[in-house]
Image (tube, rainbow, N blue to C red; front, top):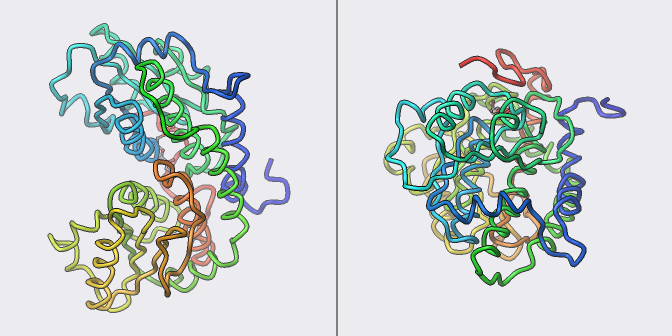
Length: 357
Ligand code: F6R
């Protein structure tokens, strides 16, 4: 039920702080440490390489998951688009573990890969919001994202829930491998949850940004570097699917290799700056596009912000920035779609769960 909300999407965006708190509770031991299934821990520990398979928004969560697992648990990870995996199959390692990330647990492209993987005898873990789903039943293990039903076609809370669960999976694997962490993951996720609340309270500001930059434009670019690049891909997908604005996410450094040719007078460029080590270079990219007439909108993080930034995010742990950066992007897409009279919850040509290949 939507309750007092005009759309499921807005309700589901607002639910994100609670979803993160729920995940903390579900995966917390009494002593405040992370608790995951022993079998999953064993499978993660035994794998010499992890292959993440997903589609759409879940694929974008997978890109963030790779960074989390590699940085926190120091295991190598590859991320693949499900529909391409069987045609562009990489040379597999000796002891692979497959992780399928799927909100619905029903995506046919993923199922095709899962069937193949099981035939070959490899272990598979499904991270899903629907534990009884096909992908969950057919895999060896399941991790539940506990986001509650997601009704809007555009995925929002399922994406942040997937990233939170991937964080805990990385932390648990690190523990199994005897790696000492220099941060308390559950406490950092609690900080993320509060930051999400702060962001959900700034809808008016984000609506103004949407109106200013996106009410009439034909296209829009998102640029970022490092972790911010992956959020740019997700921000662009959200905007495309619900507002029908042609949008693309780019790595800041790639602009000069072609894309910058698309910049015209007034082209909106949303730049994300939450990563200290690339703050100067992404701001350099903003200057390059501005010099060619773009209309830049900088979304930065407290401590890295500069005069003239359009929006400043509260500070969270550097590994977890994607979980909060996406919220203003979700809300900007939502308001852009409203301004353009689009059907937010049921965009044209799309289905919530894609059960055909
Ligand atoms: C985007 C969106 C889709 C899904 C994709 C995978 O908002 O909803 O891109 O993320 O179809 O779906 P699941 O996660 O159910 O496998």
